[in-house]
Image 1 (tube, protein in one colour):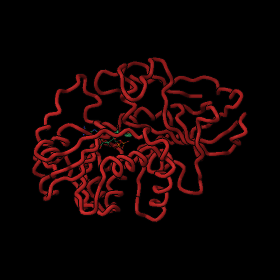
Image 2 (image 1 turned 90 degrees about the horizontal axis):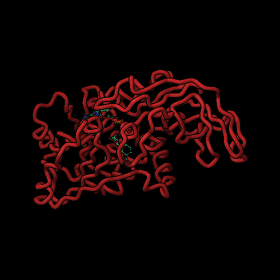
Image 3 (image 1 turned 90 degrees about the vertical axis):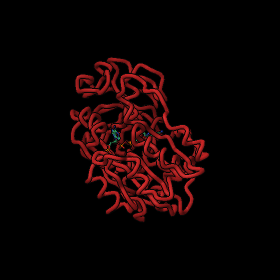
Image 4 (image 1 turned 180 degrees about the vertical axis):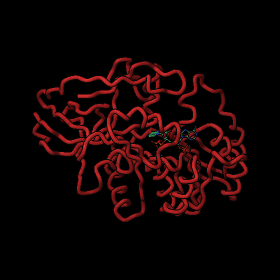
Length: 333
Ligand code: NDP
């Protein structure tokens, strides 16, 4: 059983040296436990926070500890009346080929509904984050302009499509022409901005959002967020979902720098944490599945083959290698 452990804490941008692949025997499940073989494993930006020895919304990993990840896998051995061998399950397990899970730690994945990997993306945690962050915190109304950063990622791509469905004008910000074309050409975004090739972001956002930004869904922070704040509409809502541009910063930057804009615009800024909505996951799961089924929400996945390449897949998130949800395929389903 191959497993990735945290070898050292990164200073700044993580490197492959931060990870160690170790091998041990496949574990035996105890009473009311099952053994799960990993089919797909998720790598997510929040994992950068777990590599740091500091308070965050997710517990830090210890050096030498096997790292955790959202996993879709197949039950191969069960000591639980709840699960049978062959069941496809989703849970917070390990960066590993196999993991033992408590029977209550897993939820069922219906392989008939959609490809099982979607339980890590559009029909999983990122999809639910988009759903609750946009609809509950952003409160979009028909005719609103919604600006989304990290727009071609797992969360952002779903945010933009739900906002279109809600009758909004949608503008995305992403870091590559290929992503911009996907957003406007296939996902129905009204406009998209490549921040990497745009010199004056503030002017570009102003041009794309002539009536101002009613909802800014922030996945990235930094200069893109500065440009968004400079273009808020009166009574705007800013949903702070992620700040990936700052996750590798060695020192916490000072700021926020643009709060004066909130006075002029009487705007509201609010953070969102998906796990606060656990009581309503079923609602989000059902609606997202319906939207995926009828084409309202389209999705892409970037699939890295092999557990041995999981660190590269994770590091790629900080270079924008992924279009849509980044997953690692660990074994054939
Ligand atoms: P993504 O699929 O969006 O992958 C990360 C993307 O971030 C990359 O593809 C890259 O795209 C972009 N990016 C990387 N570095 C920068 C940078 N310096 N400036 C701007 N963009 C950058 O990840 P997720 O959809 O899973 O997560 C999106 C955000 O939402 C993250 O910040 C994450 O932490 C947060 N999140 C929060 C949750 C919550 O409950 N609050 C739950 C889930 C996610 P590009 O090519 O466009 O640069």
